[in-house]
Every structure is written in C-alpha cells, then in structure tokens.
Image (tube, rainbow, N blue to C red):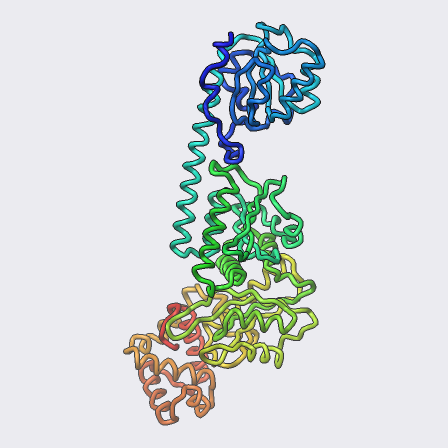
Length: 551
C-alpha cells in the first residue's frame, strides 16, 4: 500500500506560490475533481462550496499523520488515512494541522481503512472551510498525480510563453515610441477588458472601453478615489512610474483571465508608458493627448450612442453644471492656449487635431467649449478669448457655431457637435480673414452650402460656372479666384474689393476684366455676382484638404 501511494511523481519540485499564475497557471480544486483519474474513484464532496475554487499548486500522497510538516501550502492531499489516529480529539487536531499547513483539500479513499469518513473529520473540515472528498472506489493515486501535475506544468509553461509574448509586444511598442493612447488600446485588446489611464488626480487621460458600457466612466474621478488598490470587483491597478517619478495609473476593469496574468500584462503596459515618458520628458501632455483623441473620435463618429458621448465627455470633465456649449474652430492657436483661455472664462475646452494642416498653416483646430450659463460669450468677450490665443504664426482667428443652452444631456451634446460641425464648415469653406472672430450665424450662404455639400447639382453649378478659371495655369487661377472672391465679398464697392485682394486698383480691374472675358459674364450684374458667390463657396467646400491654393 505504501509503495502504491508514495510514488516519486509526488515528490517533484512544486511551483512556488508567489510565482504562480492563478488565472490559468493553477487548476482549481473543482477542476481537479473533474479529472478522469479522480472521477474513476466515484468522488463524493463532503465539504465543498467556496473551498472548491482554491487553486491546487501540487498533489501530495501520504497516509502519515505527520505529513503536515512536509507541506508548503496549496497542496491537495491524497490518502487512505490508514495511519491516522483513532481518537476524535486527535483527528480534530490533525485537521487543524492540515489547515495551518495551507492544505487546500483532502481526498480520502474509502475501503482500505475507513468504510466512511469519521464525523469529527467532516465537522472539523467544514468549520475550517477545508475541502473534503471521499472516494468510493479504489484508484491509482499515481494516475492522479501524473494527470494533475501535467496539467499544472503544461498550463504554467503556456503562461510563461504568454508572458514572453506580452513582454515582447510592449517592449516593441516602447522602443518604437508608440503613443500612450495606442499602448492603452493594445492593453484593452490584450486583456479583453476596459483599460483606463488616469492622472494622479484620477482624471481620465485615455479610456479604451473594449465594447463595455460607457456608463463605467460616469463619476469616474469620485469612484476611482475609492478604488485604492486591486479590488474584489475584478479591477487591477498598476502605477506608471520610473526612477521615483509617478506620472499616472493604469486601471483594468473586470474581464476574462489572461494566461500571462492580468496584472502582469498591465505591468508590461505601465513599463512601456514609463519608458516613453523617460525617453521624451518634454513630449505632449498625456491628459491633452487623451482629450484630443476623444475629440477626434467624436468628430469621426466613432462612438456607439449619445449616452456614450455624454459619458466620455463627463470623464474628460467638460460637463460643467449648468453650462452652455459652443462648437468652434481655432486657427493659429495651440490647444494649451485654448484651454487656458477657456479657464479664464470659468469654463473648459476640449481640443481635437487640427484639420487641413499643411506646410503653410497649422490648420483649423476643432474645439468644444463649455462655459457657465452666466458667461456672455459674444462680442467683446469672444474677442478677448481670441486675443488670449497667442500663436507663433499669423494672428489667431475663430469660427464660432451656434450656442447650445440645453445643459449637459444627450440632446445638448448632439446639438453641440452639430454646432462644432458648422464652425468647421465655416472655417474650411469660408474665406475668413486673419485676426478676427467669425460667427456661423452671419454666414448663411456657407451654412446652406455645407448642408448640401454632396448635392450633385451644386457641384455641377460650381464646376460649370468656374470651369474656364479652374483650368487656367495655377498662378493665373489663384489671381482670378482671389479677385472673384473679393468682388463677391464686397459687391458694389470695388475699392474695398481691391483692398481685400491686396492688390492695386489698376491690377484688380485688369483681373476682373480678364475674368469677365474668360467666364463670359457681367460682374456688374447682381444675379451673376450671386451665382458666382455660390460657385466659389462650393469650390472652397470641395478643394483638397491641406491644399496650398489659398482659394
């Protein structure tokens, strides 16, 4: 009996508890009980419940009552109990020794010594929460150890491979200088769970929801302060730090297990982020990068519902209580300046990536502005806001969409995004002078063209009317388009039009004469001027983004 029970396989080196991977590296006791070697013994669970969820680190075979001193914790004991004491008090003490040694469960084979498990053993195990299983048929214990140990070693080998793959992935991202938002995206994809990069003030920098309900971001700052550390709700929290400097925190919400260990994956992502900060200490602020990414996603329609938009904006702290919203486009300004100008008004701003950027210009930057309802963002106030935007290039200019007064709900946010779309349309389609504030409401023709931008009849009108000019050599085309734009902007006042075109009156008249001959029209005819104005707006609406053509 002793030879059958104490096989050499039970004495193989066991995995260290601290180094184990509980998500897949160790099977639970419930999984072990489903192994073919144990089911052959007709197991009966006498004490189970939550004890069956304990991970089994190794299987030990022994009938000796002194085996507890040989255990290291996490083992499952297989025994016939043939050498166990007979007295109830001694049996109770033996079970207590097993519990102190960290045993996760006892499997007793009936028949060789016991016909049934003594009641005192069952009671003691139940009181201590120690799993207890009885086998009603004889089995080869060596078959159990071989099967379970193979499972443990194979799974831990797979876990080590997975850890190596994860380490390779995030090391590669760090060496390539991948941006923080992409690293967070890869973390969420790898874990199959939402991942949030938050600031030390618990503000959301980047959130990758992995198809989760956007409600997980609601009141994030307040809830995150209560998280503290890894919690029973399945979240994992890892600091992003290096050389004694902590920049942020990574939070992975509940999700499926990962063979490498969820926390190990998160730590690799945190390392990649920290290396990025060390390599580029003067790089873009993470919080601003996250807000820009959010704005780009909203403008690109990359969100599931209006509820999700509200949740994302709330996490970015644009949800000022009782705020009014404006969509605007800024040219010649940085995101930092726009955000500072918004704070001066008692509000907040969310800035996206500049549009239509080229070598000549940085492009129009989309901005969602939230200001207190008591703030009058018009006239002198809007001009002061523009003046606050200190750009390195030309004097900053603003395009401002309609005001949204509906608070901060789904309907208001939808209208604010529409306001922003109108401001961008005016910025990109309108011929807006530098150093000024421009209101969408004052450009009804641009709004009309923007609303019908894809209509083939508008396109046909613009192309047909301007065809002779648009097919002219580039230099002549630019001169003629500039002259026509000036004359439609100042109908009946050619002196003002010449000034707007930045040429002398004689040169301006020469260009108008040439345009009239090429187009076959009379520029003193109001209907012709109106038709040309429409054609020019349509042309600007469809020119290539980033074009070096000023018109």
